[in-house]
Length: 191
Image (cartoon, rainbow, N blue to C red; front, side, top):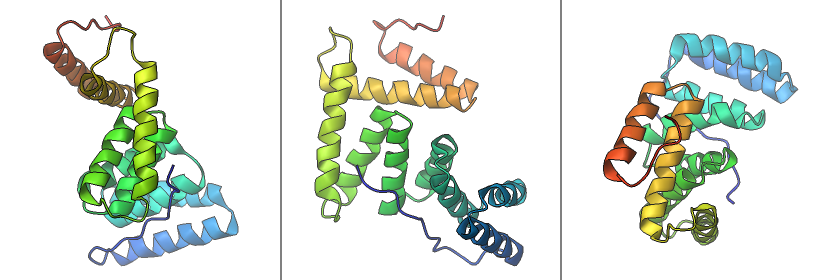
């Protein structure tokens, strides 16, 4: 599995107050004062929630504190906005794996290999993709044998779990309806 790296921001210059706050967060993290760093981060998130540089700082904070649940939302948002960045793609897939969303992790890894087939980590990622496929097939119902169907279904299952875990109930309901419409032979256990 690829190692998580710190993410660096490369966009337009953000507000000075935000930069000063992020510097404080990084300083507190270097001192090992994660509680204060977390408080500072949360106060900045209230003011600059969608700012990409803050999302990068939040990524670094949550990765260092091993809060993979919070990290998942940050990665998902960063990946949606920066699909051209291989480091963000790897961070997103790795975070999905740490949250046991293997279908979603595999999907991002496959997309990564399609976009950057010659990347330095490509060989390891190919091995990870095959291992994930084997794991997903092992977890499947005994009567499910079509691997394409299974892979799509596992991603949808992970998407529904993500929505429920992050209290995005409407999104989870829409995903379940999409699964039911497409796969009429599947019955939901959430009735």
